[in-house]
Amino acid sequence: MIDANFSLFLDSLFLYDNQLTGSIPENIGALYNMEEIDLSNNPLQGSIPSSIGNMKKLMRLSLLNDNLNGTIPEAIGSFSNLAKINVARNALTGTIPLGFNNLQNLGTFPLAINLHDLIDFVYVLSQLTDFENKNTFS
Image (cartoon, rainbow, N blue to C red; front, side, top):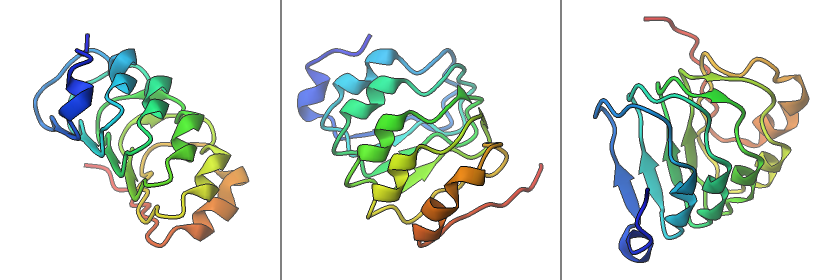
């Protein structure tokens, strides 16, 4: 459970490479002042919680190599400040939310080894300044 008092002061959360297990808590969206989150390289499971859509100030989101599944929440497409999102090396499926074409500050969006249905998303990809798709296997 995330303590609501954290939401008043916490704007960055860096917990990469910490062997965190379980799923990302649904109430992570209570951290509404969050600007940066990096939970990369943890054996997390489950999906990206839809409550992440409450983090309207988010500029950078890194969920690289976390074993996440499901789809990318539609709400992420409404983050006007989002400059970088990294969801590579997960088991995400579905399409990229169409709201991503409104992310004017988005510069980097690595997808390697992830989404399988990108046909409907050609327009959004053309708007990104630095699209990385490095399908390398270690």
